[in-house]
Image 1 (cartoon, rainbow, N blue to C red):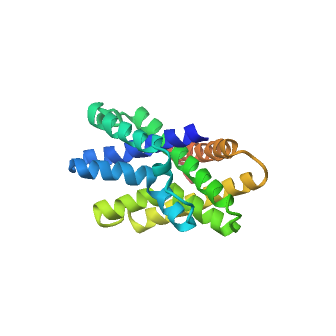
Image 2 (image 1 turned 45 degrees about the vertical axis):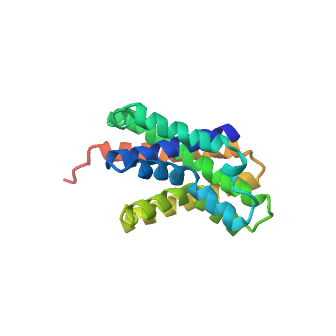
Image 3 (image 1 turned 120 degrees about the vertical axis):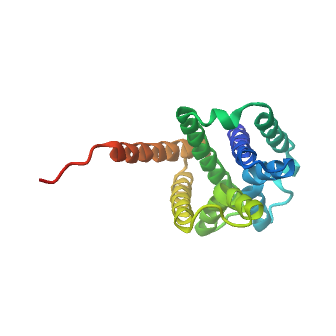
Length: 204
């Protein structure tokens, strides 16, 4: 699970840095966005759980992963590559996987303290999307997306967190839980896209 977590950290740091690069922000903003996107939710979780030292201070690999993502953003034409519809779709799927990994990490961290199910759910949600929301609030001085989009994101994340909690409580491993929920999410997205593209039947 550690390597999946590091991969997810890289993906989210890359997404945050690319976002700032596209808006032509300063180097400081790019670094801040990468750090907040990838470690913000987990940091808030560990502060609330009072779970000792923050994970990225205990394990330097997380910070090195964030720095690698920043380097890739600045050196490679990632922002232009994601303009391709196929690559953009692949990047979006990677972000879905990364978010689910973060949710599983949050739930697992809370479960080690024998927390209540509601706390497991909350820590999963916080770890999953807390960093992105914190980034938007601090760097854009507002939540970038509209209220409807925020509510939809929160609802989806709560459902994902609930599924992961249920799977982990039933004895599944964290990796298995992430793979199952990822499959469900991608299947639903694919079905919705097919329905949108299908020609509407005319009522005679």
